[in-house]
Image (spheres, rainbow, N blue to C red):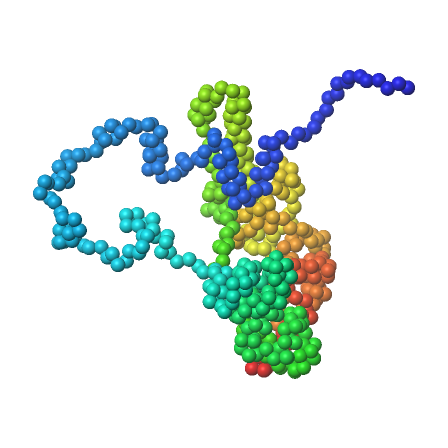
Length: 501
């Protein structure tokens, strides 16, 4: 059979992801901070985009309107009142001797020149005020100041500067000593010697490499680092587990002394660097607000402060397009116009989609808003997608990195999507988040009896929640709640400490 070539026409359908569609999908999953940064980049890149400042103060709009009209200088001067200009002029006899302080008017108040420092501005515009404002001293600045007065030579100061640069905000030295020694071309012993000097700086415990070393530095300064305490610090994992019996055996002391050592450790500072200034934490800004209306319903609205407002400058486009001569310039202007129009449309579609999804979530979880987390319903992406006529992936992107402010607090939109736990009698299922809240409350209300996971399962089953023991353990560990054995040891340690006092 011979192979031949031939032409055929076939018709088919395929989904093509255009760059504009990819951009629209990308905008959906961006947080408000990421969206703000993206819009700033587009404003710098696209000359046809500009901010919509129509909501600004009317004075600013008036100034812009006047400047855009191109008002001449003669028209501006014509409005000025020069009727009293003669009173402001000087006479021929008004001559003042140079540097003659006696020629100043008697009722004038002399300036206090003693408060003016070198380099300060005297025009009174307040622009030099930032030079006098106090700023928070960071931990690295504090350590660097102590390094300058330490009894170290030039090479050791260079090592000290490298080690201080590796100190994090908590006060721990995160540098690899071998790597630092190889990078600086010195022996490890020199690195350790300088590190020991820095560990003697304030605050006490700074530049430690782990928690045990941080506590040991502070205890050494208090002259409390005896062999028993050293053995105690070497087994901090047993302290976390509240295994007092094994700690007593390792340290060679009784249970009362172990309780006293635990109380002494609690008085130390595990993160000494946090007492100094650090980078400000960016607060979470909600994308959606939920308020209770007068009719008893819930009103959902977007946070307009997080929504970028952009406009396409049509006048500038017409002016530039008319002046374009070559094909490349015309293509660039057309691409800028298309991208600007698509971005404005995508931002509007993003806002509408967020509002639509948030409104449906509020409708599904209205009992949570009214009565709390115990009434949180099981919810998945498909339920929301089917209700609003969208795809699950779109709902997933919309709820990523988005926050909603409710009367119950500030929550991520993903918080309202929880798995379902079946009830014992087959009735309405329970939300996993609501069950977690029940487990937390049970453990917090423990008095004499420490509830085991099996006991918690029994109590939840009696309340109609069909849950397995491993699920209870998983929820408890997710909430960072110790096991019943560790909680029992913790209570015994507290009891021993109270008896010792």
